[in-house]
Length: 224
Image (tube, rainbow, N blue to C red; front, side, top):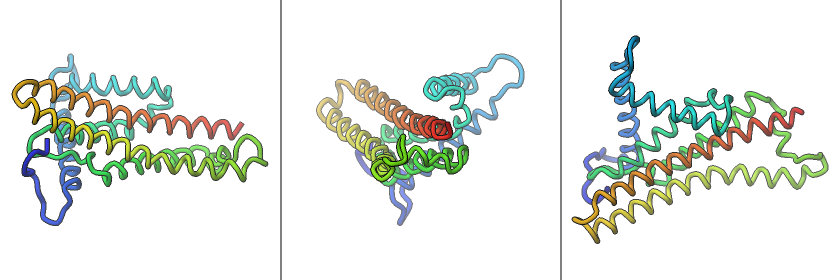
């Protein structure tokens, strides 16, 4: 928790950028550690076993929401989940800050989700992807196009403010609870922080998967 001076500081670089790079570095180091522990034969152990469980659970989660089609986008969804999770958890470490507690970071993540959704829709279904913006019949297009456009543009705003607001509220709540009961329930306070960190990462990727699934389904519907 950011209760005192931060351990990482780069002159003229915003804190959320510094700790965003730190979160990326943590993920790279974890990936390298897992790579060096891989076993071609025999039962997995250690980090390999842990991350096989994590990725298997995430893979099942993706397929449950999006169906088998979701496996094509597992890299995107998994990367978003892990980066957001590590960023959220960093805020629980004294001397560290959570980059997702800054609106610039969450907006950048939301724009990745927004851009990927429409890029995948256009790539897979070409111009027919935009037919769902016009409504079920052509004469509703003047009404439906503005409504659908505003609805889609609101998605990155909603994603960014939801994650930012929840992480900021979590941070303030933990500080208040820690100041009220510094020696009584520190474990419970950290458990609450861990719960919020996992939930918010899960909610962000859940909405991303729903947007991706909706783009694919709407494009199919437009083709038919």
